[in-house]
Length: 96
Image 1: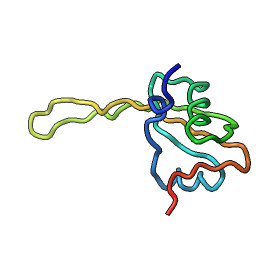
Image 2: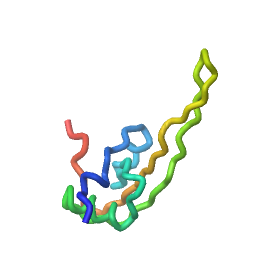
Image 3: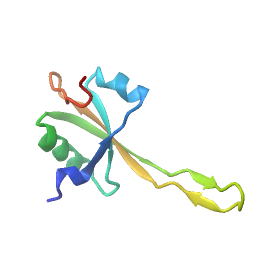
């Protein structure tokens, strides 16, 4: 079995993800090879919460062009997971 910390890479910090936290929905960047059951088990193992469902999205990296030489490069592709927790569960991510 894979280590849960290798599956969940980092939380996504944006206005939209902060608005979802109030409803018990958390967004994470995950390993591109991770499946939904692996993400589900990793979240439960790391934080000890109950996961209701996991939605994933694969994001293609932007194609970028350099200014002087006109070479083309690309940012890396990424995968995000939107995790919905069972009511009453909470992940203490950004506590002040």
